[in-house]
Length: 218
Ligand code: MD6
Ligand code: FE
Image (cartoon, rainbow, N blue to C red; front, top):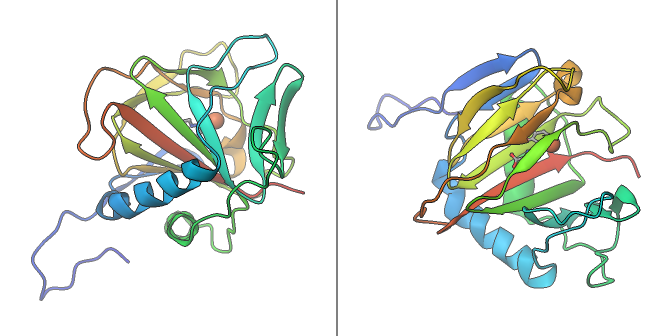
């Protein structure tokens, strides 16, 4: 899909790396379409604005979040869950914009997961200093579908652990346009994001944006 025909000037073709069994890193996969993706994200945030949610311990997350799709991930004092309605607006989460859905499907295909149709997309917005502590993603019930994770804006140090919380995670630099696809056995690996370093990105200013696309059982 990304091979450049011989008639065209050489453009750096996005590289594919395997970080662990079931985790593929597609470097620069969506750098070319970032502007359109951010446009879609802004349209979602007009309807369901970014908000800092409260976790069961009572702490407020440093990451601001919103969702698009049939289901959205939320947390409050009572726990984590997927909901069809945005608790802030009382309305359904905005429908998934076509450019986001198509990108997630193409990234899944490029990583060997044909037939992935996400129905949930969590949008994380990190200001400088925001972080995400080590966690497992296990609110989706069904682990047969991959998770597609798209990063835009300021770079991040992704913390890639193992199946045991106490193992020291690897530190992986994730940049604007990079996509991680997690499938199969990798779905329950502990992971997090180190505090975002100060910077200004031409397209997002002082923010990092991450989208995680999932197929959540209703
Ligand atoms: C982030 N990502 O990159 C947070 N979870 O901002 C995640 O928590 C994540 O990238 C599951 C699968 C892929 C991810
Ligand atoms: Fe996660």
